Image (tube, rainbow, N blue to C red; front, top):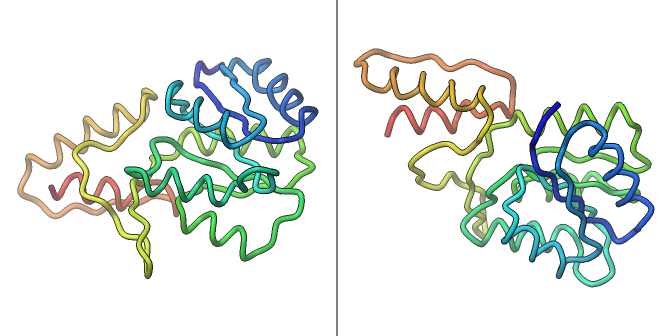
Length: 185
């Protein structure tokens, strides 16, 4: 069971409530938003640990909202984009803007839970979006509230005090670069 807070942004009420029910049953604290306006409010005031963001919404599409959040001091939590009409280009654009994963609707229970768990264990990379590229932003401390992240942060501080070469290994997207910059700084 987890006490992580998740914001579900989708214009379809049935999808929002189904995802909310599933994640609540798994012990997550879930807020929902039907459009970009509500999503902005929850994102800024509730500080979720994860956002599940639909791409196609009537007022502002998910990619535009993701870009808005990324441009505003970087993403402060992992974002997983969802779409029933996704394309490779959309998935690439979402990833370029900082999304940690892209899942297609209809969602399977197993896929949803697996993606949520993976995204919550991801160390969020803080990025700045420029015209030509996505580049790391200078930061002080890698973000995350879980016991695992706190432990890794503690180990990184201990390693940083040593004058030895460091090899950081891990799966793609696990935050190797982020902790490398942290140790170096």
